[in-house]
Length: 113
Image 1 (cartoon, rainbow, N blue to C red):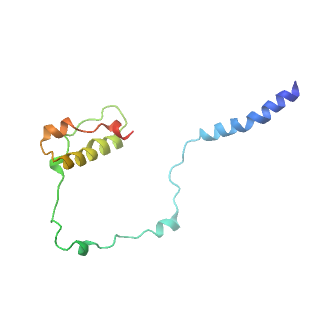
Image 2 (cartoon, rainbow, N blue to C red):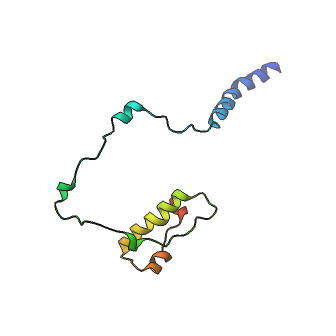
Image 3 (cartoon, helix red, strand yellow):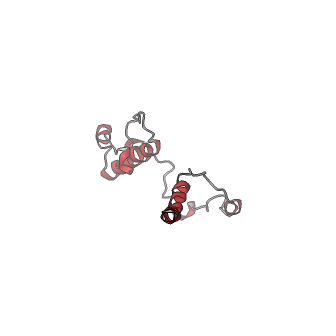
């Protein structure tokens, strides 16, 4: 009986240890100074690649949905990407500039999931 008990402990102990390790929450960013130092300080100037064809200003405001509240849900990232950014892309692609049409076709924050 003792031998069976020892075998059970021997085979199940590693699974218990792994299960405990997985419950440890992440610690966040592990910053690497050497890799960070390799990142370019500023982007290469590309304005000359476009010539004078770029406008002096641009706005996507006419394609934006009306602001709404996310309520008690912690969905700020989903809300900003799905609700706003995806809706802007869809409205611009379909040529919608009427606010009611845009508001009727807004994306749900659950769309990203």
